[in-house]
Every structure is written in structure tokens, then in C-alpha cells.
Length: 251
Image (cartoon, rainbow, N blue to C red; front, side, top):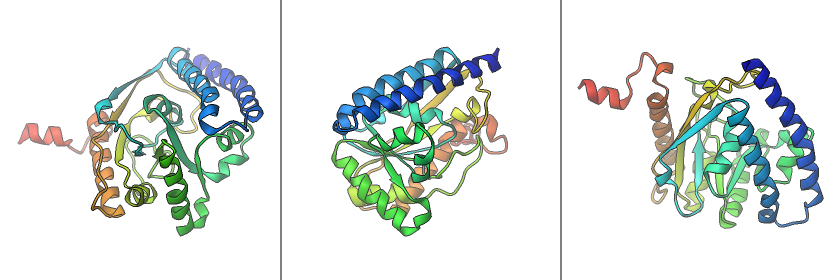
């Protein structure tokens, strides 16, 4: 049954995405916020499919930590799930993504039409400048900028080096940083056809004020919060490590 649900979801997604992208192409001349009126019904329907076909639900902890102003969201990245869900959880979002995705038929074209930030990951320091310049423009327009600091989807229980691009954007713009931990990969693994039912936990941490902090300091604080929180929401993936709460309980 799980395989059947996964196949049905993929079939519906493949049927739904091309008409949606063609619609976006037809209204490409509209302002970005006006285009969002066409984007959100698509996102909401995909999330409906995820919940009702795949039986993957979610809960959000720490909603009260979402600032009332545009922010830089530094988020754990485990699956494609969060690229849809974060658009529902946060009011206006602009994702930073690799420019190579533009070559994907329909999906890549849709990204190009969205208020997102495309960067050339092979450009070295220039990519950092791209994130800062384009990210500041999005923040000024009222969008919160979503950055996956590890740069790619990471298997549950693992981590990669946290890159500094998102923290640098916060440092130069003054926008608060919101760290986000999640465990979507436990149900929707990278490049896995089978999606397993369950409840994704999304935990939103207290905002980090970048005032007086270097990009390195911001990055370290966000990384520490996210990785500690991962051990709290998915303790079974870190059997040899005590979470801060567990450590206090045994002290």
C-alpha cells in the first residue's frame, strides 16, 4: 500500500506540475507578489497530496519565534518536503538554490519564475556576493530568505559543513536569523521513491539578532541550535549522544 500511495503521489505531481508552470509562463509579466497568487494554490495542493495520499502530516514547534519582519531562515535540509512546507509555515519566502536546477524541464522553469535567489555554486566567493546582493533585495521586498546552510539534502542523523552564505546575508542586512530543525528525511528520503507515512516535526528556534556578531558567530550559533534540536526531535538517530535535556536529567 505504501508503494501504491507513493506511485499515485508521483503520478499526480507529474500531471499537475507542467500545467502549473505553463500558467506561470503565461503570467510572467505580473509582479512577483501577484504571481504568488498562482503559486500558493499549487503549493497548498501538493501539501494536501502529501498529507492525504502519502499520509505524511507535520507539527510545528516554536511558531511564536517567527519574527514579524523579514528574516533569514537557516534550515536543516533532508528532503523535498520542506521546499513546499516552509512556504506554508512562513508568510513570504524566497529560497536560495543552485542555478543548475534551471535545466530541469518544467520544475526548473518554475523556479526561474519564482521570487527565489539562484546562485552559481561553482563561482566561489562570487556566490557569496550573489546571496548577499540578491538576498538583500528580497528582504527589502518583504520576503524571508530561506537558506539550507549544508548546501544539499543530508540523510537523517548526519550533517555537513555549515556554509556561511546565509549568515553573511544576515550580517550585512541586519535581518534576524531563524534556525529551523526538522526530520522530514525519516519519511521522505533523498532520491527514494517510497515515502513512508508519519509526522514530520518542524522546530523553529528563537531568532538570533545579528547586531554586533560576525557572520562566523551567527553561523556557529545557528548550527549549534539546529544540531542540538535535531538530537531532541530525533534522539533515536543519535543513540550514543545525550541531548541537553537528557544531560540535565541525569546530572
